[in-house]
Image 1 (spheres, one colour):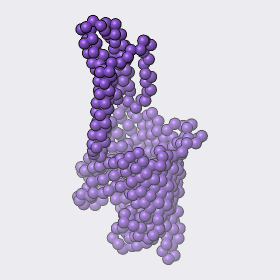
Image 2 (cartoon, helix red, strand yellow):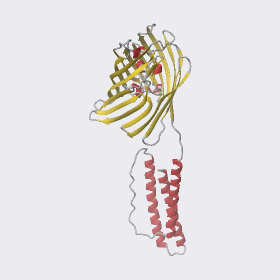
Image 3 (cartoon, helix red, strand yellow):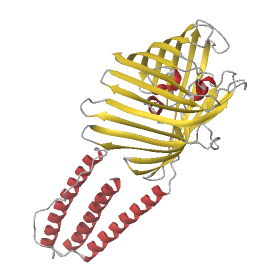
Image 4 (cartoon, one colour):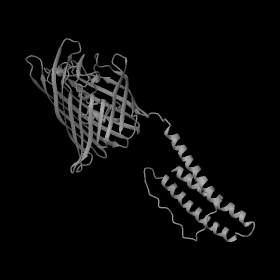
Length: 448
């Protein structure tokens, strides 16, 4: 747009020089009076047209993302005037200069490396438990510093890199490449990804990543927490993932199909097997959701997954192997002043040990958020997991016990990029000798 205005202005100067200077020279001998008058008339009309174009271009510059066709102005017909050869030559020279300037600018911009945009999340907090043990420490906490990059390689090739820095319970700093995925968009409705990605089951795991600022509550539901934070499901997968959408009469269908390395339980925690599948039994899963036209903001879906997992418990005293599979549903409904999220998982696992059998378990949660005032949101969440203790898939995991928890809290947005939250949890874990534990949490989370 700026080059177009430059061209118009430059042509204005060229026309002024081309038509006025020869006319002055001709006026000295008194022989070109009529020709000068005709040229001046044409110049005035040309400058008026140029001014109209400049005004129209200025209006277009104020309209981002808009594409408007500008019809060329049509000056009134007038008697043809034979152009002066000198003036014509000057116009052509000036036009060539404008073209050269445009080419040089385009070349310079093409070779400019603007780097990769970097975004991130950071949170700090405080937690107080009414009971204490080795796994329940009260005090100030450093959360996660999450670095989020999306390098671009043209209109079809996509990539996503997420690096997280966080302190463990032993005080050591851990660095994780939470997501390393490269994709190719065959269209806006069909994208193929490969690498390490968030496993697309339910709603929460792909809607909310490691940046705490984007979710309403402080914590994730426990059973879908990240693997190193007590989750019993593979939050990450190394493999391939096809995702897309399609329009129907009922609404928009969103779909995910994925496969990857089956997990391993290592020292009581799920391991996503970044360097290859340890038992040559890949994970398979799907997620299909429908965003209803009849109820704006409401999405309902089905999801399922199957894999074979082997490993040992935290102290290495027990080992096992099981095929774990689940089928369930989820829903998300967001209105002007509320949000509602719920997920359900029904497990039907099989123990591969001699004399082993089938084990059935289930887990679910529901969270409601409501806008109480400007920037202030209240939320309530209930969650429960009923897990078969004889199932090796759950028995080998440190967090594989039945529990129920209720949470209530507030979130206040200081601005669109930062939030302060408080949350009160009441947790009853079947494997916790302390019984019911109440926890009060506070968090300050930002994004940049």
